Image (spheres, rainbow, N blue to C red):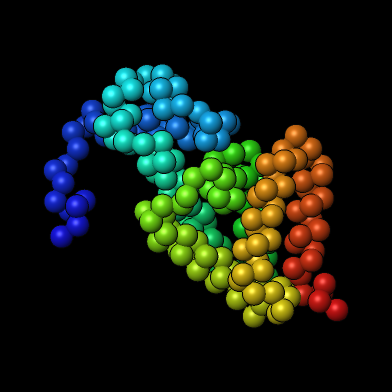
Length: 194
């Protein structure tokens, strides 16, 4: 039996407070990255610092919870795209989404780039799930003849980390980011392998 199975259910007010803290933390991390103090997150959530610490004893635990939620969304999106029947464009849609989201949300940048915090064991499973979902998009795109056959998952993950970092550094230059995204996608297309 896991600790989650044996833990008593949370009271309704505790669930609401936890959700408010996560929402405030997501917004704070998205704009300020890891620099935002837990007390500031408590203020933004409209709760006391003790409430934050009761649910998330460390900033790393709170950051992990926010990133877990974000990465679960990326896994869902990748799987939806894989099942949508557009194998020739699904990977490119996913890459575009990641690039645009990362330019606006510093927490994703920090997580994918590994800046400042070790990704904990709590996120190891979702990291594997995300990699697997992206690998499926890659394989489908290659089978459809839309993605270069000489690109493997390791290279693709490195390219995704690169576009995420570029999104952080060039977030105020949207035309440049769109050009970088276009070059990346064009370089992955099967026609680029000539």
